[in-house]
Image (cartoon, rainbow, N blue to C red; front, top):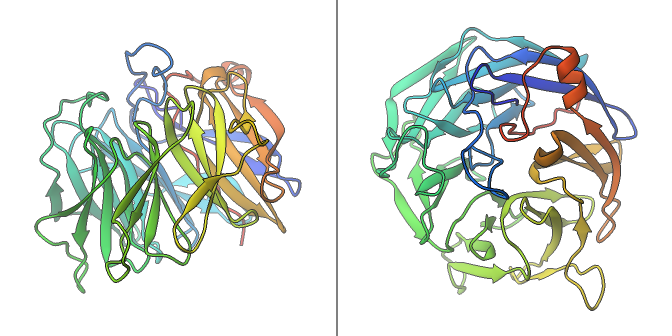
Length: 371
């Protein structure tokens, strides 16, 4: 997502059988992005300070995105025979607040929930019934003291997800004394009027569920990462904060089924760290060597949103390289084997297409593997 204030575009690519990308098209979302944040390096990229600004539904065969500059949400249909081809579904609709920065789609593909980070912050549910149908009765406030555009150094939500059973909505809120805000989802789809909180960490940012557990891996640039244990039947602490040596801004996370491990993305150091989490929820950094915790340096990429896709029997990682305004493709290959496979420049193709793109603005990453 270009996330330019002058007009937001989705940039799509096709994925080959070898995991490599071929740029396909840029599609106007019908809204405006936030544009770059006015902050010093290395914090001058990722202006939405979030994970999940784009979402994809395999059941619904569509992609949804936030337009932070126009306070709207857009949805585009995916051509299953050519998933890089996108078609708008109706017009963008209100996000129910200001400066939307993250969204999530339910497993049935008929509901989008979006969280807003601006002066009017909180969440909204949007039904998909052939078109976008926001439910004004679903608006819930986070009661944060914010501005529009959001003050990214202040208290902001950074990701919204459904619980595994889709009985709760969970929002990571970074405040310096962070927490997860949770709303119960009633049988009729309505939300509890108030949210409860699970405290932990300093600046909980991205949320990645831990398979087979009622627990979440949450990136935390104030520490490294947090593990939130949401299973109250287990005699464990609710939240464990784990420091990562040398980290500056671990903000994004992803998981690979091929390796069985999690990956932490540090935009400031341009390093990806691999984490092994066992059944007890104890975790360790998978070290490159006995003397170093630095695993996968990406030069000056400034990596942001990152996802893993399974192509055939192999996992590939796709990361947004903000500092070079490009994309980096890596092969997972198993535990401790992440290697760079491809780098794609976005500047030259965008210039040729007269598309405004800026590494300080770009956000979001999702994949759709054809059915």
